[in-house]
Amino acid sequence: MRAKNAMTMFMTASSDYFACRCCILNGLSSGFRLASEAVEKLLKASIFLRTGTQSRLKGHDRHNPYRLKEELKSAHVDSTLDGYDPLLKKLHDHYQSRYPDNQTTGRGASGEELAEIDALFLYLVETLPMPDEVKSDPLFRLSKARRRRPNRKS
Image: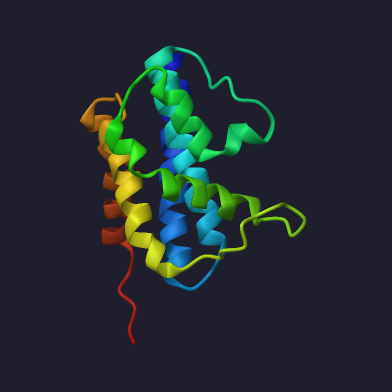
């Protein structure tokens, strides 16, 4: 059951990540919220696999990637992940911006963040305590779907 919950989180995070890239590359700000959700789900999957329990965070904190990273540190110290703290905090700000009455820093979002989002997402996937064969499955399906897609004429 533990692996099923983590696998569901991982698969959903992968889908959110692919959608976030598509949105950001096409100038849609909703991609930044999807990036936050993708990272949140990978952190929750990692917490679940490393502790055997779901995140203990409650309320708004349960969607905060920085707070989830801090919770993960109690089970798995990772100084490299600490280097992503500014991005984790900014992702939470992007998540909060989904409603105009939520408090945010007002810093906005920029497509220039995508390279750092990519690096964080891939780092989290690489360090997720799952077999590599499982982790590559969503990527394999995406590449397979691209091969089946008919060529578009310009």
